[in-house]
Image 1 (cartoon, rainbow, N blue to C red):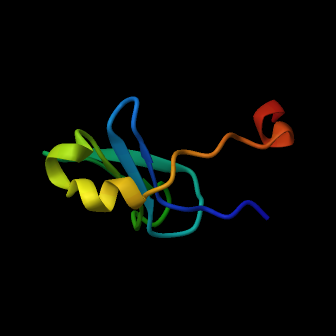
Image 2 (cartoon, helix red, strand yellow):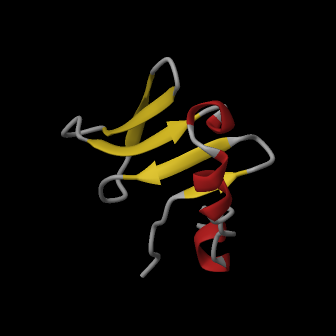
Length: 77
């Protein structure tokens, strides 16, 4: 089972926070980034916060992990 977790990609200054199960999503643009919504139900399944260092304190960001690399079988699919 591939566990989902929030992370901060320091190279592009984006925080991603999962809020629901992994599904097929569409992005709804906001002033701060994207809301990922389930294509069927419209429920929010994730938050993508652009320019994260402008919206989230440095103390919080520094505690967030970097994005994990995809597992080999997932990358090949």
